[in-house]
Length: 409
Image: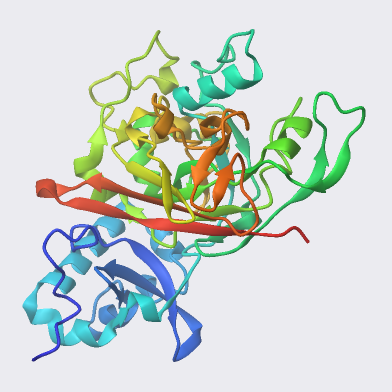
């Protein structure tokens, strides 16, 4: 019986030719050389090798060890490269050139696909922000006065962004419960997750020149799943008055695969209804503002057991608004900038994207096969998966992001 070609992907596969997310990989035969690949079903296609074999003008950007040269090449190149890749994996006339450069996904090592420049994380889910406000300010307003006027965010630590599969060391730091007489130092006892979506910037911008709301697609290349690990006890003691610091900066896990925005055209949704008018630079009510949200269906699993299904379509602030706000003061964009959406949570209990919400700050334990959990224990493995509606009813799969907690050092 003839061996099936790696280009013959089953109909309806969420990683079919309608998707083609980008990553960076190495092979067991050549562990030191990193290559740009696109995922097709259960295989990775060496994009640079195929481009060279076919004499493509994009061979140079696709032969780099990271995605950064492709990211920086701009939207026209992104479109043209995607069109070429689609032809290479679907046109029978290219099979002889492509098949030798296909590797089984199980046989390769995946790496962080881009060099991260800056990292910003937002707080864009009204459901999440409301839950957090009710937990910590039960007698006050759930949302702070500024929340519906601007996308709240903080600057993170780009050097601790790690690729899916990297172990997460339990962080140590100061913590002080309200009833404690003084702070203590030690491993976090309230280690949490935040199910998020990340965005990576391709085209940079000049210092002093804000990026307009309508220019989102000129600058942002694609999106991916992101887990913003959070030490809630460290965070609670440190965050007043300047916000998150050591409670967040120890690790942020991202998927090894970046889904180009063009693959998600069928998943675009309108932005939510607003309670009152926004300032002009954030106002996305005009008909010529095409970028609202994305209908991404996320699943959170702990040790293989599903615990939540946060819906990204319910986010109050969109990625376009976040980009506009991030640059409105003249801050420049750099190729490889990453920003996170903030925790994705929906209105239902099983749609909450953090253990802080799922357990109501430890009050209500969740049941796992290994026992009850309020926050993460050493050895726990967290996985985020997601899909989006694609063309003709086919799902677009997003690369998962996994991290396992190991004991503090």
